[in-house]
Length: 403
Ligand code: FAD
Image (cartoon, rainbow, N blue to C red; front, side, top):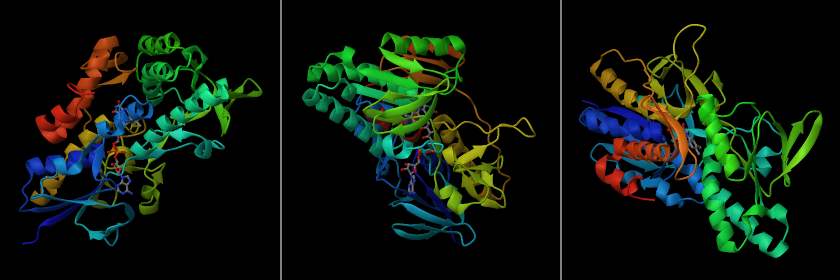
């Protein structure tokens, strides 16, 4: 009899977790699994700010997908998905056409600049290894130019967004900028780093006193944070902000936009009812009218309940991984003809790193700050690899022994 064809698009947290769990739990005699991903490697999106700030080399945040693919059970194809035809049950890629019985869409996130004039052209983003590498290259290029020009403007860095990614990136800069200054013989006091946040409050996912801890961390490290300040435009000099009725330029030879993400653009092209690359999924993470299509990770808007008060879960790696696990289970249920299960998020906490030795967070119901938070973050980062690749991959690519 014919095996059920499962096609998984994207090998980020959601997609790779789906495949790992299918390989662990389901029989290859019933399933024919194909995983398609743009790169030959999986990258840890949650480490990209470290690459962008030059704290780690990009390859430290990646591992070869072949490390986790059991070739007896999964066919891995390196290709870019270009179109999904849900009626014909076919997916177009740069490596040809694939058909499926069950489709898992896990194509992740992209930057969203909310139409702010000039942002796409004039600011860097932190959304992939390529974009993260470009940020550090830009900082280096500008700091080296300063050696010739003596113009302090070359040493200015402006970051749009004082959210989770913004804080984690600034935290890493607090470690790496003094090192770069030392290396190039530049006085750190001449470097101006500014972060601009539209909301009056930062890091709303944490209690106020933890957010204050993070704000004080920036201050102690000569990083200026402007809150309640809307960015109106970006140009090749910096970011424009509105202060009262006046527009003002916040100078930045290096400009980085961290304040917005959306789901993959292919979502709008492939499905109806998609907003900012995200589609509302049913409780079992399939989409309306297509029980054979699961959308998971940052492309999915899974509701945290029913009725008027229900809100979509935030887009996080933790949620993406749990969605991947459930999807593998539900694929098993479909094959056995059993009812699929709804998604129930188990919140294990969140830690925001502030460089390699500091941070804030709530982990296992407890508040942590400082070195304990930094250690907890390393454990979380390593656990993500352990869950997919087991102890050997966790030891070689995780953060307990390395970096
Ligand atoms: P992704 O991890 O983006 O994976 C998508 C995959 O699909 C990628 O491998 C991509 O290359 C591939 N792909 C995309 N388009 C195509 C295509 N057309 N064809 C083929 N392949 C394609 N979350 C947390 O929970 N905790 C954190 O501490 C945290 N820190 C973060 C720090 C930073 C700097 C950033 C940017 C994000 C952070 N997040 C964090 C959010 C988290 O990274 C995302 O929620 C998570 O990566 C979503 O997982 P995903 O599997 O949906 O997508």
